[in-house]
Image (cartoon, rainbow, N blue to C red; front, side, top):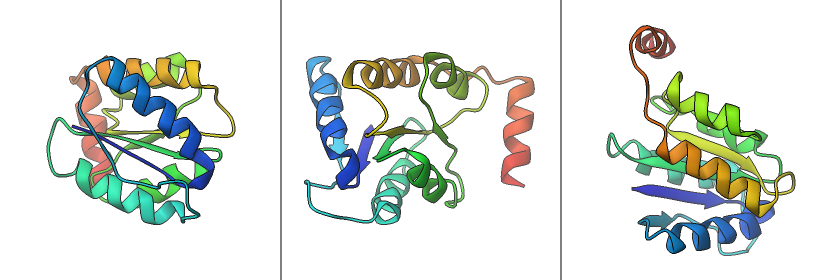
Length: 140
């Protein structure tokens, strides 16, 4: 399952990503906001606790720059959130880092690029091997 959440600064981009997911027939849960002013740490907690509920779950967090959302998410044990603004980072954060949450900047990215980043993030599998050993060190 894909869990999405944004603060007010990321709301418009989140709505665009929801349309993208719907056009691809992908299931998702919108964890807020609905356009009202909210604090990104609260939305990050909602999304991340849902992501931790299953091995195949992925999260998408959007705030103005994506920085605050990534900082909030990475405070939660078991979350590996990555702020991405380019294709390479979105791909390799899954391939090598097994990231389970992608963070995006609503005031930084356009809808087209954000959709591409989401696609590669969702469709790239973790490579494992030596990278799994490195991930274990993050949790110790």
